[in-house]
Length: 629
Image (cartoon, rainbow, N blue to C red):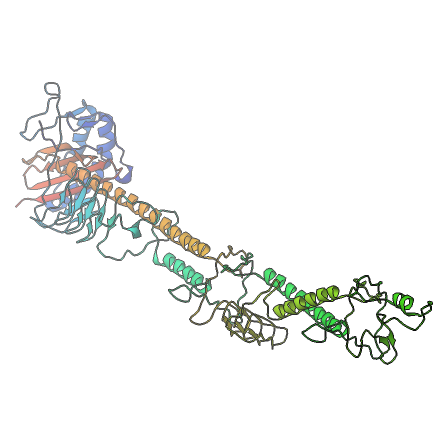
């Protein structure tokens, strides 16, 4: 195995340096045709050395000719320049006899320890001796005193004194930063997806961060503040529970808050749903209809009570007809049994006395009594029953007598009506029912244009509605819904009271700006805001990671260029000169350097100039001179 160091770039002027293909190999060496020498060396070396010759001529009080033009002319007009690579033992590498070739370099050390610095196409410091950085894998990077990446932490980066990256592809930036991946699976880090690596900057503030634009960009404080302001606005406008018990929601409108687009709630004995205006209007319509029916029923009962034929008392042994001058029973059918009433026709035929028997009316006849202006069934001053009375016609034009069965049916219906009216008055029947088991007072609608429904309900505010046992709508335009609910603010809807709050369930999604929102809408809006923030952070982080990778490759290209320039040999004898090439490779980046050096004939002056170019399309040149004394 051979250990080789070196790289090759064709030097040019500034950014105009152009890499040549098939010119250099880290194993076979360098082969430069004369055209390359003419273009490259002439363009780079001559502008550098011409001022040097002038300076030396001034210092020596003579004319100094370094022989650069002659050397370039000889090199350009001659055969191509071929340079072999030397291994660490100083032997030329011969690929024909030994085709194996492997280049490596374990480390570099500078003579003067200085802080680590990359810039100006130079590395001017590698840190403190004895505090070496350690990269645990080939594709990892560790820069800084005691900076380290762990074994198995592939593609990890640790930059800064004591920085540590122990998780694959993680980045530790800044002194003491630790990227160990321990927090990657925490729930707070997973809102935007599963992360495979982390960037740790050691508790430092990241400043100068532009606003993220893509879903995976990082976000700055201004963007987070905008999200925070939006969440604050949302929190200010959202309907929230009054406490952690979630038993009451108080709407915050200064003059009350309307709830619109409310779907119809279930109306049954176990329902806890809110009802909407149309449902309440239907109830109001039924209440209005029942009120009108009750008024009409009361009127009819009053007429019936005044005109109906009734028993004298509870024994039901007699009936007193109430006409001031007596009451005629008309359209009375002929009686057929001994207990039936007889009509005038029967009475006339049986009691006229026109037969041969003569002698006046029969004893069982129903005579007319002028004193009472009616037919009298009494015998010997004792009232008698009239039996066998057929059912008379019941109509507005009927003048017929009614029998006991008809009167009984009327009494049964009357008793039912009395009970029904009482039930309606107490709201125990109909489509609006009240079970006043606690004995509360009747509802009171004392305010103008109000409605109170329920035992003990009070609607005192103008235009208010109290619906439910002991519900109180005190403020104008307020609505109190449910048992003991209190609406004491104008134009509000209350579904409970202080300490006895209720939830409003099955609220549909709000559509208009003044609609109520449900919990699903509130959570969805917050989720969208968090998703947008996470997406922006991811995009910004990816851009930062890409820039860091480019910086790493630029640094590796700079190292390779420095290695190539350092590998150019130099002739040290008086009057001698050297035109040399150097090649190098470092962490996948390559560089080539070309240099020329010259020692004056008296050996007192030494001049050296070189140029380099690397695989990152970066080039540069340097020159130096010395006087021996």
